[in-house]
Length: 50
Image 1: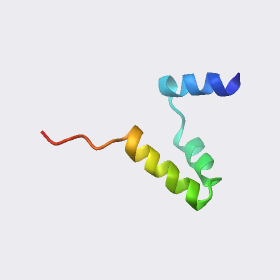
Image 2 (image 1 turned 180 degrees about the vertical axis):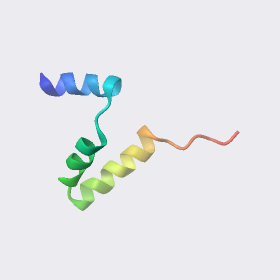
Image 3 (image 1 turned 60 degrees about the horizontal axis):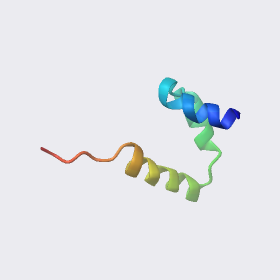
Image 4 (image 1 turned 45 degrees about the vertical axis):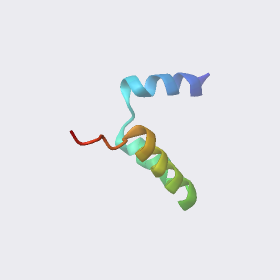
């Protein structure tokens, strides 16, 4: 239940940079690369220039 509640709360309240950095520090290099690619594709996609 906590995982579901956390995934719902995160978009509303965000997470601190410190917690995010700590969580990412546990990932090995291949998983960190995968996370970065996911983030570039789905979280912060490049906006087309107008």
